[in-house]
Image (cartoon, rainbow, N blue to C red):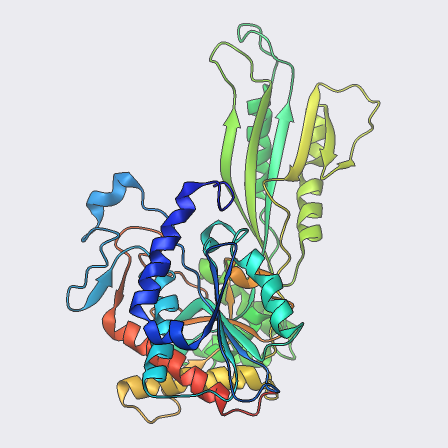
Length: 474
């Protein structure tokens, strides 16, 4: 999409802002509202003590589109917001309209009950998170930074995973980090000509060989002590249905290398967990040729990487570069990777191989938020999750669920907020999503949320605001 102000498709958010104004009159009458780049929203609920760092909540306004060819597969129209007495159906009901409306509903209800916070509460809402937040959160970040300064917020809670059953126990997994991101374009160029006089290998054939080589060589993956995924594994020890041998190995893994490798081998039988641990690769785009009787002068593909929290953009580029050196030599290609010449520039070559960043610069893995016993924001969030979960069900058992550090396989608007606080959490208090999983229906047909879960989300945000307000956070 074009910039705000030139592309009329952004104007739909104006109508959504009108809805918010009508639905939450007390929020708009009582809080300071700042609009950034027209449709980015910052709500500031001023506390009575300016010496306390604010609580920052975040949620995005936008949703992914609905493919027209899938509309007839929806149980109810995808933008109807239909409530059937049990669920609210429609695009955004999980990602992330429920988060935004849940936060604002909590605030509206607290204002109705004359609540006045001691600690300032800030709500930041971008409008293009699903397309990397370039017009929304990226523009909001410097304004938020100017408002309260670097590390000026007590903690941040944005969208993320929730809770779900694993090995016979309910586990909630607030994300304490996010994997990095890198799109690598592999471009092969070779002489054209008529297809009746082909060389041994066309650019498409050469590219195909390279892509096969990439898939045959996935990144080496290991579970490392201290990593977010290692902490997830440690929490599994407290579940009743975890196999006894795996439980023993996880317990011993802290000081025993063989036990760590045995635990790793068993845990990696779950492909989702293995993907959370390591750097992944997915060949998602490919193009080559223009006509059936013309030799393709160029062929390219894009490989998407989600980078392990224990790795980096530089390491990922280095591995991709190294992997294709032998094939560049085999096909006599002049090789350039990420701006650096790999082969001799003066050597004769049949064609060229070029690796580059596609579309945007790579994103490093997010800083890992502290989770130790002295990490007050994480402990406060854990207590809030448990309190909201228990009160919604009328429970009083402190062992009703486990709170485990989690990790996001994708990226949220928090990628722009690293300077605002060291304590960033991605958590939506959503039933059925844990350990970095994606809830059924998100980004596909029949997205819906149980109304009981949505009410519980409002309870969670209310409890969070109250707990942070009464806490000893600076």
